[in-house]
Length: 70
Image (cartoon, rainbow, N blue to C red):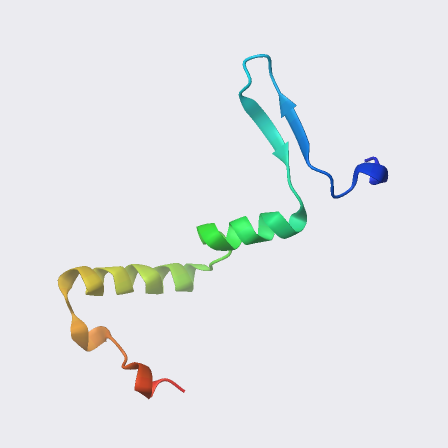
């Protein structure tokens, strides 16, 4: 790796102008990972699925009032 180019944006394109690979900074990767939820463990994913089901069913008893949070 050429450290003189560290932190600079790099783009590689085929003749068709469709990018096949990109290089991004670790910081940007972590942001994308978090936005997509790729950093969640199975328990968190299961909790989110349960919350989605409760929301779709209108199960308001599953909700916690904001005033009850510490």
